[in-house]
Image 1 (spheres, helix red, strand yellow):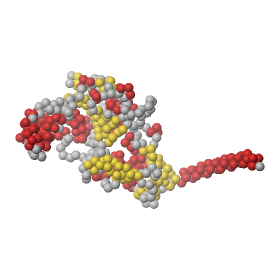
Image 2 (cartoon, rainbow, N blue to C red):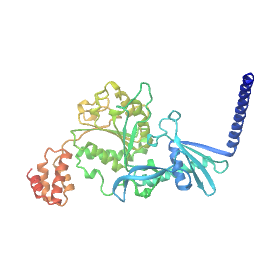
Image 3 (tube, helix red, strand yellow):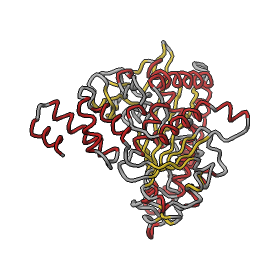
Image 4 (cartoon, helix red, strand yellow):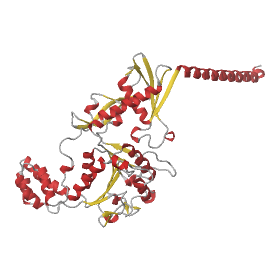
Length: 455
């Protein structure tokens, strides 16, 4: 008998299942419509998500219920005078309730789709963060909430970052040497900030410290360039940089590009990088140091555009001769890599680079293509890309005396001897010579002292 009725049973079961599924679909749709009338959901991506998290952390009270999430950041801790891990509480992906009085927000975090974001909107520092904020409709004005969060975040950047100076260093390197599939858009290369950069973690709650105790404090006292032994050309570059930074309105009034480019060449150890670092420190400029050997064209273009959102700033391309001999990329090999044309387009292409101080260093001037900029009759072959080409050479007598006086201020009787001994030294070599003698004096090391004096 069961076999006679089994087709009808199966048919009836299928019909009932279809009715239940249709009923559930209608119920779910009705619930979604009802929920949309009752609940308001706001999605925020990139920097806006960071701003909202920073605002919630300070202006709202986080619920003590639910999961917790923590992350450790390597930061300079001023009371300790060390770089160490600072524990910070973050919003867990599972979500958390934030209260402002009797009003509540439900916040969940995730990652946004890179496809839906325009280049330049989100820095790779921020991991393409996405945030969903849900609350009872009418409790908050979404636009007012976003505006308040943005204004608060900008104030925090100024008070915790810019108040101590804008100067920090970011090392930008790409994906060369890692798996990269043909035709694949690589996305963002890695971009590492210095341990004094707090912008990346203002949205989190540090445990055991306040933000004003974190990050490298700005150096005070004499200028960084005054610690260097500069010849006449170096002193002229200092004036060139100071005038460039102070002439923004002058350039804009005349519709001239507000940018500057230098090519510094000379033997290793002559102080090219130290000079660039000192200029950036004194002018309070962020420094973006690009590893050209590891970057592909799309990666350089993306990060170059991202850098220009933080002008005025310095772009540092060190030892360009180690990557390009003329126009040939000598490190790319079969994997492709950055092309010289792409580099030129970034340095001086369609996109304006107002507010950029470009510094390129090389140990071999003969390997530099004239299209980049080389000295011709005392001037650059390509102003607009490279405006000044300056040689850094061994220290002269005046430079060695300046450095000796800086390292051994309490031993002027030794300056003449050091100046004589250090003939032909590069800046790095002479600084080490002075430091070794100063340390021998500090620790009373007679054997090392005698060795330094008779050298």
